[in-house]
Amino acid sequence: MANSNQLSKIPVIASPLPTFIEELYTKYQGLKEGTVANYIPELAKVNPNLFSICIVTVNGEVYEVGNYQQLFTIQSISKVFAHGLALEDHGRDYFLTRVGVEPTGEAFNAIILDEQSKRPYNPMVNAGAIATTNLIKGVDATERLNRMLDMFRRYIGHDVFVDISVFTSERTTGHRNRAMAHLMLNFGMIDPNIEESLDLYFQQCAVMVNCHDLAVMAATLANKGINPITQEQAVDSRYVRDMLSVMYTCGMYNFAGEWAYKVGIPAKSGVSGGILAVVPNQMGIAVFSPLLDARGNSIRGVKVCEELSQRLGLHLFECDNPLGKGEWQRE
Ligand code: GLU
Image (tube, rainbow, N blue to C red; front, side, top):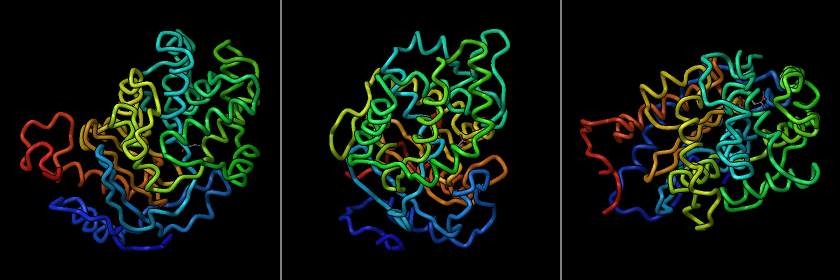
């Protein structure tokens, strides 16, 4: 089924979603602009033609098209979920002493800290993500990794694994991330076990998911932190608002402002080509297509989300929605 271009055979009554996503899939399948990420050598090997769209509603309905079972590494999308775990481990107040919530407008791998506080700007840029992962508790590296993997399991509904080749590739070549960790250590913003934290950060980025998994994770955030398929509470509901706020303002690299303006829903993308978007109390959306624009966002992914948002009236601040808010839902 990995290369199926068929809609999954889930019985659907009067929902326009299958038709919408099939139309969008057909419309953008031929769009071959962009390049795959190559700064992590293993990522450059991906097939650029892969493409899938998946929507999971908070009621657990699933609509998907394309290569939605194709595995890829989650990369930066993991930052959203590490943020949630660090908040559970330390609470909001302490977390904010170590990592800010301010968008940078800079590239995700910019080597910058807030002048005054010396905090990294937010948990979605690399410096902030490394500082966030540094906060994840555990007596040793194994326990920290197992807690991280178990956290992903709760959101996805099955065990997850780290792609060792991608992990090793990034660990060997991630000098820039290592430099950021040293800079933060210099200012006392992270604990001294930086090699262990960098390993955990590279491992979290190399967790393998497919487009279906990403949509379930997004739907879990849309559903107050409860996985709509397994009904397991994946994250303390108190922190969902923190996670979504930071996604909304910082999740789409230095396109975050334009995304918030045009698409209007919290989202996070990663350099392997995934985009995960959350429509609170309604649905999770995921798109996978590895061809990226200059900022690191999936080109087809951005187009699909822009159009879905427009056609389904998903923008959070939409007042004059021709479809009527939520009219896409089944009776
Ligand atoms: N592991 C990647 C890095 O740290 C994640 C990049 C991304 O997806 O934005 O550079």
